[in-house]
Length: 199
Image (tube, rainbow, N blue to C red):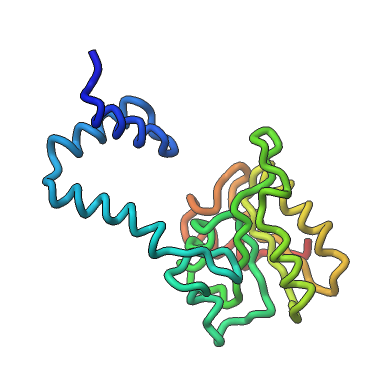
C-alpha cells in the first residue's frame, strides 16, 4: 500500500536532501501534513521559492548575497589584497564567525573528487586566477578542508599560483585530518588561522 501521491512526492523531495534517508523523509512528510498548519506550510513553501529568487551568487567571490556583490566584497575597510580560498559558503561563514580575518574570500564550490566526477573544470578556479593576475594581491590563503580531496585541491592551486609574485599560505592543521572546517569550533578555526604557514 502506498501513501497518496502528493505525500509520496513530498517524501521523494525530502529523500533528495543530504543525509536524509527514506524513513526520515517519510517522517518529515507526515509531520508537514499532520502537524503543520496550512499557514506554516505556505510560509515554508514561500521561503523555499524565495531562496532562488532573492539570493544570488556574488560576482566577485562566489559567496551568497541578496545583491550582485556580497557585503564582504563591497566593504572598502577590508584588505582586498588578501584572499582566503574556501571550499564552500558554509566554510566562509565559519571563518567569519571568529571575527579575526579582515581580507576577502574566494569560494571554490567544492574540492577535487575524481571518484565523484568532480575535476578542476567543475570548480570555481578561473575567476581566482583572473583576480590574482589582474589585481595587486599580496597573499592567497588556502583554507580547503584537511581531507584528501581538500589537500589535493590545495596542492593543485599552489601549482597554478606559484608563477605569480604572491605569498601562498595554507591554514595550519589545528583542524583534525579528515575534518571539515564547518564542523570545527571557533577556537580551533582561530588557532588554525593564526598558525597558517607558507605553502
